[in-house]
Length: 281
Image (cartoon, rainbow, N blue to C red; front, side, top):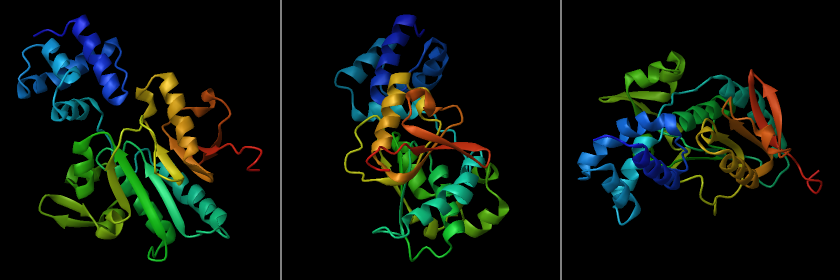
């Protein structure tokens, strides 16, 4: 069953409405490879039938299956390394100093957006442990969100196969922060307790989340159109404390969206600080 250009246009518009991912013409192969298996699972004889079920009365299970199939789940512990070095040696020490004298000097709030299967937020939690040592005196919460129910459920288990840990995880951290289980390695409870996983579409309003000290939004916006990227980052700025930090992917350059963020260079990476308004200075 061929995916015609007309079918692709209908499906790609639907995918965009579901999760904000923009699929241009050269992603036709991706739609065929990832969605064709779902057509048998949900009794769709044609691409048009899949489109109709998604648009008109299709089950929530089908919509979630499409999101899980299309969204990229590629990730690894301490991905690209340098952002986590900047977090450890620059952002966290400065943040701790900035919080001295505030109402909540030992409260830290971090958001890992599009966390996939959990390697990023757990990496952040390990860095926090390395910097702060005994965490019992701290009020720490890492919010980890993803649009994929499958990814969130897997991440919350904190169990990884040997191959997952061979990519980015040092032997020292493996011994320190993981426990061997039958199906692989499990993140220790002291680290898992810092992270709260939640299914969330980051293109929807950030209602009721409060303010964050650090946000990781890495390699997420590259899948969105420019106007959606700008809206996303400006909304992120609204949930950042004035002394906060935003980590993006290496190709996600915020300066093109105006002077809302100040780029900072450290440890071979770039992160951003929100530009203070005159009232905040």
